[in-house]
Image (tube, rainbow, N blue to C red):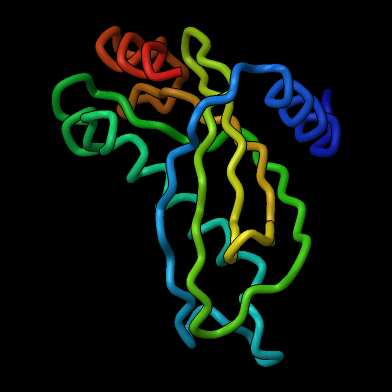
Length: 154
């Protein structure tokens, strides 16, 4: 069984050896509700930011989560995530959340996501998402149109 640190290290190492691909970027503004008593973004909210960016990344590829559910009976779930928090974000910061495709398997997609303020990296996440049949929540192959479209965008 692999530990989170090994997962993240392997995904980040792999990302350095791939041809440079422009990452998908989604803007996020930090609201007061995102911060904790210390005035910084609560750690779990970075996961919300990355989730929103992944949804928008899928949308930018032409796939709505609701359409995938209705037409194919599938959805994506996070199988594993390893996050490294580097610097804090604060109230009213304008952030950019990236999605970088690392690998597309038969039923799994590996991504690296970064939360950035200006040119400063605040958090990095290695994420594995799995395609599941919604009725059973069992892993299945990516629908062919999804796999083709995502693979051609690499």
